[in-house]
Each structure stands twice: as C-alpha cells, then as structure tokens.
Image 1 (spheres, rainbow, N blue to C red):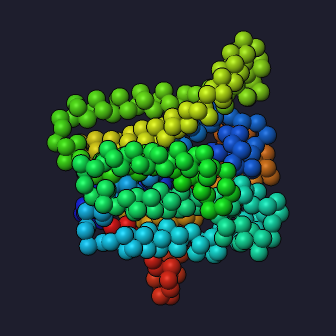
Image 2 (image 1 turned 120 degrees about the vertical axis):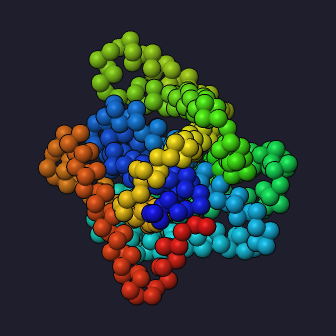
Image 3 (image 1 turned 180 degrees about the horizontal axis):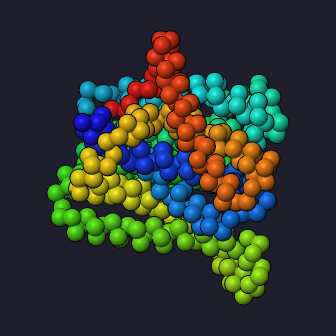
Length: 389
C-alpha cells in the first residue's frame, strides 16, 4: 500500500496534491493572462488563458486554504494545545519556510536572472530584494504563506469558539466583521501581505465546517453528494463569469466585433462600479471554489478511485513534498517563458506546452535534490519536510 493511501484523511491529502499540480500549471500559463500581478507578460493575451485563469484562481489556492481550515479544526479539538502553542506552531509552519526559501531561493534567483515581479523594485540587487522580501513586499507565490498566517492567527484568537460547533454561527459573524474591517482599513498596506488578511476567512471557515461534518458528508447517499457537487459548480460558474467577461472586454481581438466590445465594455464598467461594494462576492467565490475541490476528493474517495489510480511513486512523492513543491515552483516557469517565447519566439500554445513540460520535471528534480541534501546534512531546513498533522 502506498504512503498516500495510508493517510488518515486521504481525501485532504488528495486535495493538496491536486492543489500543487493545479497551482504549478497555473503559473505556467499566467504569462498570457494580462495579469497586472505578473509583470513578465507576452505581447498579447490569449483568450483561452484569460477564460481559464479565473477558474485556477478560484479553485486551487482556495482548495489549499480549505484544507488548512480542515486540519486546523482537527488540531483545535486537541484541548491540550493552548493559544500560545497554536500560534507558535503556525508561525514555525508558515513563516519559517517563507524566510528560509526567500533567503536561499527566491531572492537569489530573481536577482541573478533579474526577473520582474510584483513588489520587487526594477533591477533590484540582492540586498534590496532581500529587504523587500523581509518586509513582505516582494514574495511572488510565497504571499500565500503570509495570507494563511494572518487567517490562522485570527482563528487562533477565537480558538474556544472553533472548538464548539454550537458557537460556529457566532464565529462566522466575527470573522466576517473582521474581514470587512480589513477591507476598509488594512487593504492597500504593502507590507507582509496584509491585503490578504481577511480575503480567505470564509474558505478557511468552510474547511472547519467540512471537518466537523465530515461524517455526515460520508454518510450521505452518493446522489446527495452529487447534488451538492452540481449546485456548487453552478455557483462557481456564476461567480467566476464577471471576471472572465471583464478581462475579455479589454482584449484587442474583441475590436473586430464592435457590438460585442461595446456590450462587454458597458458590462465591465457597471461591474467595476458595484464590485467595490460587493467585495464579499470574492469571498463567496473562494469558499465555493475550495468546497468544490473538497467535493471532488470526497467523491473520489467514495468511489474508491484513490487506491486504484493514485498509488504510484510519483503521486506519493507529490503527497509527501507538496509544501516544498509549492515553495520552489517559481521562478522556473518564468525562465522557460523567457527561453521559449522571448528568445526563440515560439507561438502561444507551443510556448505553454514547453513551459509545462519543462517546469514539472525540473521542479520535481529540484525538490528531490533538496531532499537529499537536507537529509544528508542535518540542517534546520528539515522542518520544511514535516507533513502537516
């Protein structure tokens, strides 16, 4: 039996594996999305990528966050773990990897190859980049470590409410109020990714609910789980569609269809006016997306597909090292984008295909090498290999 199938909550482990695979693929296509958060962009965006990226954003990172909420609830049931111990464990688990990987990988790689990145000063040297990383301004994909830390910190303060399901409605009101206050008073502060402090409260809370009601989900008839699946999918599609239509309205090829461009432009203008007041729709989108990943894993478990399909060495490696695969996955796609698109000048889809084909083996080889070095040299980086309990 593979290590993966021996996991107690194999569906959560499965969700984390899906998450790292999805996030890595997401990073391979972002160069053609027109995203302002990825300065290294192609000359023209791809309509297909523009349509796909909101789904990636909605599903995979929130899926990680939901898993974290699930495992936090599992740990919260241990009444021996007090407030201080819980915060210390979270800080070690999240901020320690952020600064270690930032120091030995992120800053050196972005400095050597001078990769433009959101929050990194143009052509920054090592010390300037290190300062920006230390202050949480420049972190690229590692922003998630800060985002998860802030979300978890709030729930640590509310630990007594987390432990008792009868108080969860009160907990939901408190975390919602906290997220609203963050939106109005914290959003825009460039340090330590405080803008993400409340964005994922709902999906983290959804992970807690999934933990406390997991037996009911497994006890339901399959058709009822499928009903939840389709209802949640419809909700995801409804919540994702505004982002897709707004992005499409700004693309050059839309100009060939004046009526369509005019309609989309009018729609995006109206959506922009109301989106500031309806910012909670993004929270709902993340919660629905994370829950969708959870339902996929529940159904996979219910149909016994995990044992039959995912008991391979490569899958077990991904399961064991999903955190390291996440930490090291950038800037590898950036380097391949420069090679295949900027240097060789390949079209969009051959570029995406080659970036993907090259990134995954490179990433797995890198993590394997880091693992060998770490276990051979008794260093503190070993902590990065500890699976979340």
